[in-house]
Image (cartoon, rainbow, N blue to C red; front, side, top):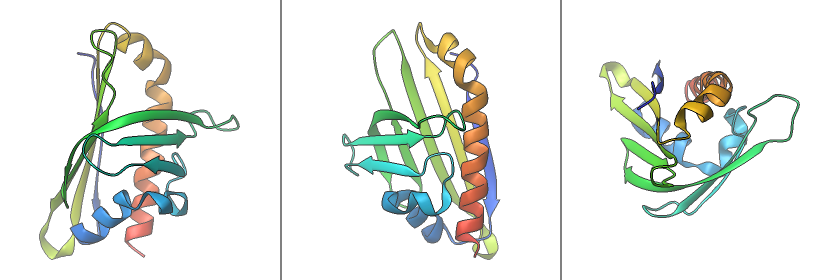
Amino acid sequence: MARPIIHTAVLNAPIKTVWEAITNFENYGLWNEFCPKVKCDFREGGSITMYANMFPGRKPTNQTEKFFEITEPKKLRYGINYGSILKTDRIQVLFELSNGKTQYHSTLKMTGMLAPFVLWQYRNPINRGFALSIAGLKKYVEQ
């Protein structure tokens, strides 16, 4: 497996507030500069289509994936499964901390024959985008 992309942050907001922000897909444009538009069927097995600004100044890239796991208010897991060619696993986990804070942990894992190429091409834009997303989420839930 290729090295995963991991981002974490401590948010000065209760876990329910953070969960509501990351699962209210209609409001992503209010805080998520990297992925301002999302359409989904929010249920395990449902689809999620993300419109991501992978390369600033270009048309957003859309990616449709499936929800593998939804555990309210702690975990979202979704990705693609093209067998041995490419699998992705995006996991967002929330940990309730003391004093009403929440730790947000995001991991993107890729496996399969195309994973090294996809990560070679997209690791930097994904890292930039995830950092933008967390900064926007932090600002949004801490207001």
